[in-house]
Amino acid sequence: MATSVSDGPTRIAIVEDQPALMHNLVKLLGAFPEVEVRGCYATGEEAVRALIARPPQAVLLDLELPGMDGIEVIREVKPKLPELVILVLTTFDDEAKVYEAVSAGASGYLVKRVPVERIVSAIGEAMAGGFVVEAAIARRFWNYFQSLRRGRPLQDPFSLTPEELELLQYVAKGLSNSELGRVLQIDRRTVRTRLAHVYKKMGVASHVDAVVKALKAGLIQP
Image (tube, rainbow, N blue to C red; front, side, top):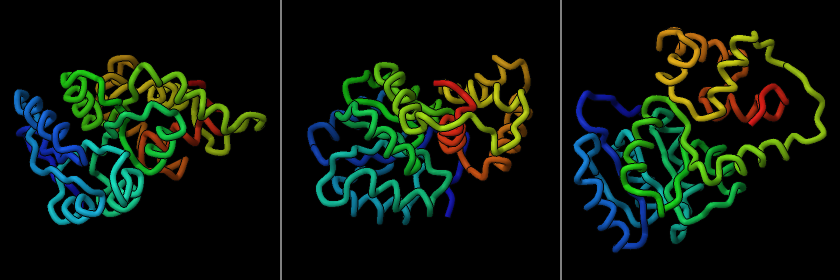
């Protein structure tokens, strides 16, 4: 089952176990016409059932949930809804947790102290194909990836062209497809085509998987 895209507001769900925080987030997001909250869930188990039965376009997901935690939710939902955008919104700012969440399929990671405007813009970036990591932990996040491959020889098992490597380098910085087009001075259709070729060569299906593989192989720098 796949999520559907419309020209209206982005349909989102929120998974948060603290009622006061949930209520406040729903209230704040209600001021932004570009998003529409369609569901609120307090446990991972409830969220998995509801998201699969009634898929939104994006999810704001807390990692600290009773019972099934947020990472388990991602692992359960993402294979069934590969087009679903999942943004982790949590108090954690641990790069290892970031790695675990994005490796499971999250499209981005924000801590709860960010302004609601940043949450809304992050949803838009992720919906456009970008990868979102809060600036405060972005460097630590990519350095963590670097540490996972430390000591490995430089190699290119994917036979990527210089243009494709340049594209991946910008993807690693979190640029959306439209931003990639502006930086590389190509149209969005060409960006999508080049990314499709990269994904095919690397055997992946997302920006995150491609960046992780490229970093581990030493092909790009954080």
